[in-house]
Image 1 (cartoon, one colour):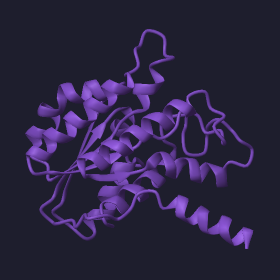
Image 2 (cartoon, rainbow, N blue to C red; image 1 turned 180 degrees about the vertical axis):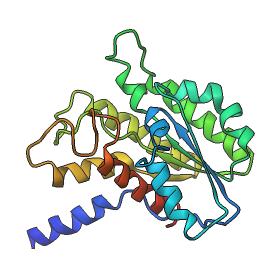
Image 3 (tube, rainbow, N blue to C red; image 1 turned 135 degrees about the vertical axis):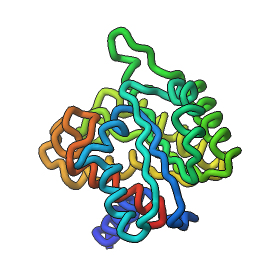
Image 4 (tube, helix red, strand yellow; image 1 turned 45 degrees about the vertical axis):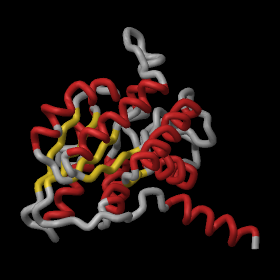
Length: 225
């Protein structure tokens, strides 16, 4: 009975990005808005390319646009949303942000984003997108280090910022793609040696091929696929 309960809990934990209210159309234009993880996502093995390849099989006219810039945090997205998102007339925007907002607290020469500014900034970004009539998917930040059981230096902060993202998604009534939960659950099962990198990331944060595949899978679920 106990083993069965653990098995069911594990299955539930792995279903992190639900296939919510999204119903894609051939005319959709999807913008992926974020930092260097999103910038790298348009490479041949990147998660945006994987999503594009999958969607084009069913929606041959759908448009996929990457709008990632290395080092970006929520305030940077606020500063460039008009030029890099709104001006492109998207019907769907996927926001994947939060790693640098946390990481920069311990990065020399950088400044992290306070929790208040992070929350208010996300709400402003989402509000601007919603005013255009576009739909929004908000992703929780993933990992800075792949050790299990909260052993990475910034795990506690990432959990706090992920909870902020969950709260904002609920408050603004948008779809949440809980990548943080997906990564933690995956590493619990697939990191037996408790290594710091090399499974879902290449350098503790930027995605490996397997990380790109997991993100693509979770985002496709959030898109109703």
